[in-house]
Length: 354
Image (cartoon, rainbow, N blue to C red; front, side, top):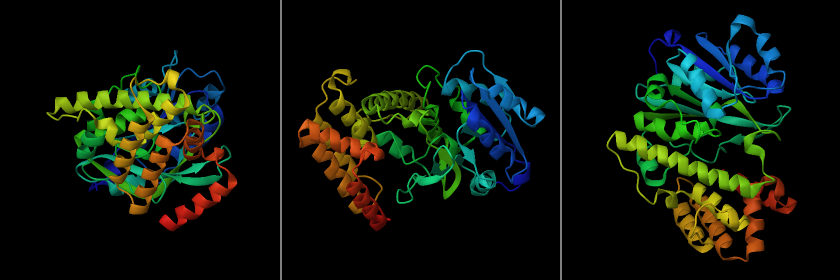
């Protein structure tokens, strides 16, 4: 940890686009931190709602920057980082919020070689009612030097934007974020390349809330094929960035890295199964992807039972008739599509595995 935490300035950059109805709660959570040395920066990415009025109501307590043209997630992050001064920088989505002890806990957990701190978040609905935890408690974070895992499979267990904090010197090395490739999901770029420059430190406690609602990018469950295609393409952009950054420090990403990542294979299988015509990878087959997914599942950092269940799921999607495979995909990827009996069964299994 830092020996003089009272001297370490922290910046919280809030990225907002048309989330005026949530923005006040987000800004309040940043201003109400129990840690004193925090600057709060709000980037309004050309909103057309009442965001300007919400921001104006805080006066000089926050820094603000209204972008004239909407540029997306990466553009807002880049703009906010350029305005920030903290040695530790957090990027907070405007529909999420932090708990008052978040920054203090991050500072206490920080080590000399930390590049990134990650912590769990409560999943809440539009009205801030707790629904779950992300990542789920039974899913262990990956910590320490995760570079070998990145080079091998292109991913490690991390979290989303609002559960992350980064060392400024690391961000200096990896930013600006490519704005075209990461118009959405800019946190995917950061968590992929930041660990090449130091360790990942994990906190298992929930230090904030991740709001799920009908308008945010994570919630377009009714368009499962579109979501899967976007995530597959996002992975390709992440891995291109990873390869470029790794090459700069003399490291090499294995060429078949995606085929060792069960999360990528899950989305790629969903894209192929649901809408083959728009699938972005020519030559893919359900059976080949499912087999790769089963093998990758058995190599996960998880309980033996969890690994076996995921491997069996992959194989079932690979060999069952397409209409059955689509249903099984939907049940796993979109919780709201599951029959009630299956929900109860999965809840029982989850408690048993926890």
